[in-house]
Length: 427
Image (cartoon, rainbow, N blue to C red; front, side, top):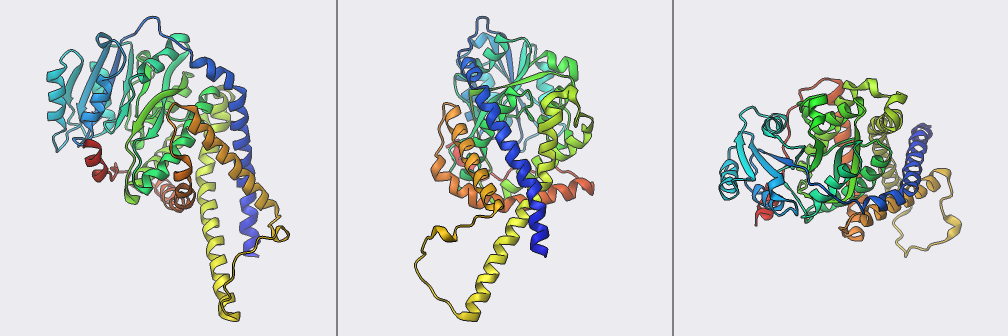
């Protein structure tokens, strides 16, 4: 009886998931020609751009980040880089000063004593006089063509107020980072498809670029439950400001390299999403906010809860199967033999077919994400790790995020546990 109830509760989730996947896949193919046309965008007049680099104890990655910005194929008299040290305890500020000394016309370094990334970015925003403003996390890097590719979207339509890039994990080494590489491939597809639907859910810290007038209209960054990039996206949708995605603008970021670091990062993201979504609940199911308000935002909010339940259900099924197998062995003994595939015994339940269809669509989505940008990841090598390991994390960070949000627990900033990888990144 319990199995039937638990299984019955899974059907709405599976239906919504399948519908969501088909909807996004259909939308992608409907807009494929438009995406190809976007790749031909060009720049006639180069506007001025300021890139903020907020830092907190980033001595291991800051140099590589600044090197990538200085290597941008963009007129240097149109580019400003503002490094803001958010009261670091290491050599971050000193490294920034070295780059300012060697590139005085481009790089400026400031110290912000108020703790919090939003304070650091707002200081850079205050110092900026450029037409466009963006942020690059100090653990990320860009390719030489990235900025030109992004700016071309603004040049080709005045309606676009912000552009998000295509983000990949930089040099994934540990199994946790290789798992994230697959997750980010899915993000490549989702962000592009959301962009065509005018429903992008986050303008991520790694190199999202805004027209400066955006901040004049809606204000500066806020703490926003330690997810300021998601909150400002909600604010832009509320003000009906269009956000696009450039799938050829490559950005590489350092992913957490330990299970602890990955859990803490995803917990912060999940809780920040829930709390900000609740703060902007007036966007839900309102036609005036288009696909974002009517579809993608409510679905994402619902999927946090259903994703938590689905992961718990999957673990329950797996444990039950193991227990049943052990009980059978204890009753009749262990009889090992080579597996024999017979189509007669193939599971033909409705749920099994839905799961196989969802998995097939998921693989297609990952393949598209892998081919959409100019950087191909080791898809076949990393996918098995993602498929096995990622679901094990979901009940923990989703469950903890739900509990913390609705019991109003203190929301402290949680740092990524990437010290070892930062040393490798520096070398």
